[in-house]
Each structure stands twice: as structure tokens, then as C-alpha cells.
Length: 202
Image (cartoon, rainbow, N blue to C red; front, side, top):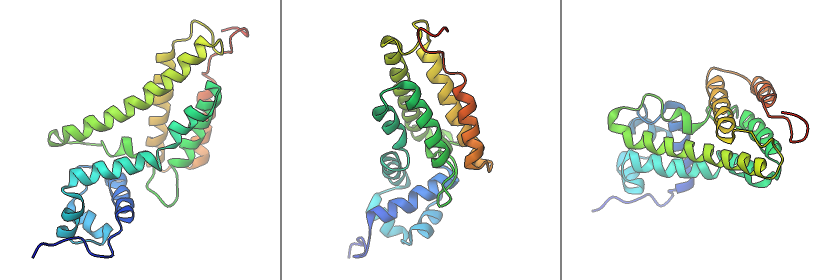
């Protein structure tokens, strides 16, 4: 008799549990035992529902991007002004990285910690997602330069790389126990690096 999912199985609830485990421990350090314990599923049920650990992680990662990590895309899409978008992005990151009910930091960063050569495809996928975020930020800044919102000599790539590094540093600080107020101070300090508006001097 083939083992299937229990009738009470809730895929979204299971993915929430998986997100928390991968977020806290990273991909490589997360074992099937940790996952089954957190999800309340036996290993056969977990495999029947999701396949292997890699498939479960990718499903959890997709859900994370659409939920906990969606603030990045929203800030860049909804704020017409690039500086306002970056300010919102940094402050929402400060809140997102210090949620009391969730592990600290950013899953896209922490899940890649100490990935082994056997997990190279997972590390590459996380790199691609982080790079996509940086490219979206660069595009927002480049559009601001083109529109005259920023000085013409502004290096959009360098500025986007800087703020990407700030976000990654904020994630690391959160993992080390920094409070939301600490991260908000980092955000405000980083905003001082924003170039003066066009027409107001460089």
C-alpha cells in the first residue's frame, strides 16, 4: 500500500515550518530529522509531499520570496522616487530582519552559510536571487539618474552595490543579536551616502 499524505496535511503550514528551519540553521545544517520534527511529519510523508530536501528547500524559498522577502520588490515598485525607495527598503529590512516570531536576518543570506560542494546548485540559486535584487536596485537608481533625480555622474552600479552590502551587513548584525533600532540607525547612516540631488551640487 502506497504511503500518501495524511488527510490533515496543510502544505502552506508545512512550508512555513520548513522556512523557519532553513532560515535558522542554513541549508546544509538542516537535516531531515530537524525538518520532520518541526513539520510534525514522518519522513515518508515529507518525501511524499515534497520529494527530497532540495525540493522542499526550493519550495520554501519560493514562499519566502513571496512573503517575508517581498518587501524589497514592493519598495522598488511602489516608491516613485529612488531615494524614498531605498529609505523604505532599508527600514523595512530592519523590521523584517528582527521579527520576534522568526529567525533573525535574511534567508537568502543565512541559508547559504557554509554550503558544501554538494550543495553548489543551492548556493548558486541563492546567489542568483541576491544578484536579481541588486540588479533591480541598480535599475531603479539608473532610472533616477536618467530622470535627473540624481547627478548625471552617479555610478548606479556602485551605489546599488553599496546598499546591497549594507543590507547584507544588517542581516549579519541581526544574526548577532542587533535590535531593530540598531538596524534603523545603520539605515539612517547609510542614507547619508546618497548623492545630492541634481541641481543641488554633487
